[in-house]
Amino acid sequence: MRRSRFLFILSLMLVDAVMCALAFFSAYMIRVWTRGAEIGAFTDYLPLAGIQVVNTLAVFFFYKFYHRRHAALLVDEVYRLFGAVTVATLITIAFISFVLRDTLQYQRSMIVFAWALTIVTVTVGRVIHGRIHRILQRRGIGAERVLIVGTGEVGRMILQKIQHTPGLGYQVVGFADASYDASGRASVPALSAPPAKVMGLPVWGTVDELPQIIESHGIAEVIIGLPESTHEELVGIVSQCEREKVSIRVFPDVFQIMASEVTISDLGGLPLLTIRDVALRGWKLTLKRAVDMAFSGAFLLAAAPLMMLTALAIKLDSPGPVFFAQERMGLDAKPFKMLKFRSMGADAERFGPGWTTKNDPRRTRVGAFIRKTSIDEFPQFINVLMGDMSVVGPRPEQPAYVEQFRQSIPRYMERHREKAGVTGWAQVNGLRGDTSIAERTKYDLWYIENWSLWLDFKIILRTAFKSFMDKAAY
Image (cartoon, rainbow, N blue to C red; front, top):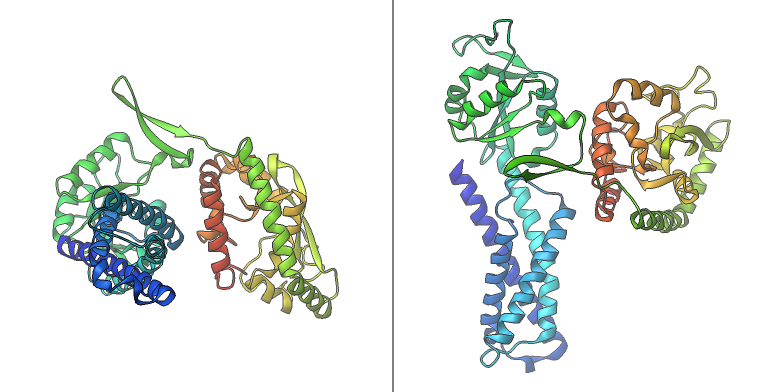
């Protein structure tokens, strides 16, 4: 495992170096094309290229580009690369200007071209490298072997998340159970007995047998999914894992009541957790509203032809209105009429509201298509323009469901501290349609307490990529 991790980092550094050099050579060729041979031979610029490559790799190292083991979103990768390459280029310019100004000359425009091209080439190189790495991991080469402690709902949820995110590079080898009887003894058979199975994976033993399980199955990382465990039990499990020097991750028990960013501070040396609430306030509200108006106005103008064709298709397909207006709960739990293109028969809710299910018989022929492609959501940008909704935010629910969920889900009503959104953090993470409301609430609260314009931008991009191939859209 350590050897494969080392080779992965080494190969990534090599790819970065090659792509950085390629960017510099491409910048030189652009200058030759615009200025001709008067700028000199490429060999004259080799020292400058070498300095730029070394500086870029050094900055990448300090930015921890070679410390992360798991895949990041492309938009996050490009954002970090932009900053890192900019810093590396500025260091190169400063080094040449103050240290080598009498011995090494450079073309300013070529440096600018090299900076821009480096961002592009390194991104492409990392995407290709990442895909090759994931292919190897799917074949069991370099994948990190993971053990999940806990066979309950949380343990199963962790397994499902890993299985649905192969880019993480995890290979779950099984579970360790932590169910106790009245005497406090683990109630699962010892390792010598045939292992039970949970979701097709074996339960190798109990938490008391963790050292043996870790050693015998080559475990690299242990994920503890026991939010209901006591402090003493959790400390005991962690100490068992520490004996084998594996990475340990813990699903936090406080996640049910807290979703904001947590930092560690101290009180005279006593460690404390600081919970940071950065919900939209003041000028941020004005900024978000300005972005909402600009984006929704531009979207409605661009989508107008498609929306007109959709309206015509709905009228020709089945009797009834083009739009479907349904009461939803928005900011401060105030009701508003949310607009959608009608995708079901006009009498679909004659027996009251109900969840939409896969292959719902109430859908029309056109309705099935526009729901699958999310075109039915387009009129909600009218709600955004009117101020009832935002482009990004928690998805609004019907009042009857809100009343039901507020009784059973902790902090559910805190979703209504901000405007409802056309799309949201929960939706782009696969939680739409007939999925867990409790899980959606956790994602919504995290978004509210960690809002930024960049986060909205990422969510919009991910929504655009997923809209026409989202399996949860029905």
